[in-house]
Amino acid sequence: MYPAKFTYHAPWSVEEAITLMNENEDSKLIAGGHSLLPTMKMRLATPAHLIDMKNLRSLLSYIHDKGDHIAIGSLTTYHQIESSSLVKQAAAILAQTVSEVGDMQVRNMGTLGGSIAHADPAGDPPAAILASNATMVIQSSGGERTVAASDFFQGFFETAVGAGEILKEIRVPKFSGGSSYQKFKHPASGYAVAGVAVCLTKNGGNIGGVSVSVTGVSDGAYRANGVEAALTGQAFSEALAASAAAHAIDGIDALEDPFADAAYRGQLAKTLAKRAIIAAWNNA
Ligand SMILES: Cc1cc2nc3c(=O)[nH]c(=O)nc-3n(C[C@H](O)[C@H](O)[C@H](O)COP(=O)(O)OP(=O)(O)OC[C@H]3O[C@@H](n4cnc5c(N)ncnc54)[C@H](O)[C@@H]3O)c2cc1C
Image (cartoon, rainbow, N blue to C red; front, top):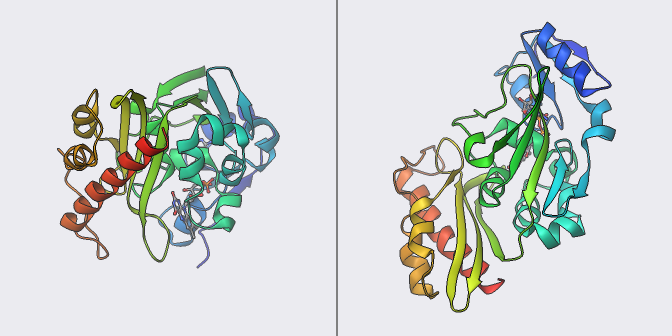
């Protein structure tokens, strides 16, 4: 299917892109196009103006070492991230998670910024963004603001990025503990039917700090606070991992679709949480 007609723009600066958005209410930014183009072809999105960010790659495609964190430009592709020795070493959860997105073609085109601005409930990267306590930098005509991951994802395809704003940079704190992303892939698309990301530190035989996030199960990725509370400060054992993982969907109404009903999805989340906790402990 062909998309509905639109006017095409290709600005050369972030400011020009923002001006175009402000001048054209019914506009959409396009990054890698791997979520937006399919929705336009299905006529689920029919923007009158398409603002292509291809000329902004030299400005917004980068991975920089900033001391205590890694700054990643929003147009950086999954493949650039999974190939970065800096990300693999200091933000392993992000490197592993993006390496599990789709296939190589998708990872060569899809961008980290596009994924998290899109906030697909079955997207993988939001799990890593939440578990790593990343911060998003958002620009509008009024200047820049920063938003913590915990405030960024706001439900079904909803984020803190508002009208006339561009997600510019993702700041990922460096982390030297153990981490793991465990995913059950949809067999056709590769999206997460359920996915769980865990980052933890060891304190002797005990778990020190821990963050656990879940994707694919609810209307957006979320932190599994019950799992975190059950693990924090406790002596590690596989039995502890299993009992803590049982809290993976506390307070959540799991999604249902023809591929996975709510009970199955919820059970997947618990099983994947247990695996991710054990794997993170073993590589901490
Ligand atoms: C065959 C296939 C398999 C896939 N498998 C997976 C998978 O297994 N796991 C997974 O997580 N994803 C999967 N995806 C989706 C893929 O990860 C997309 O690349 C990603 O969701 C969107 O990134 P993008 O750069 O393509 O964004 P686009 O499609 O260009 O944009 C997506 C949305 O974000 C907005 N946007 C983009 N960039 C910005 C920005 N900087 N600031 C503000 N708004 C912005 C756009 O306006 C649009 O609304 C798959 C896609 C395909 C086609």
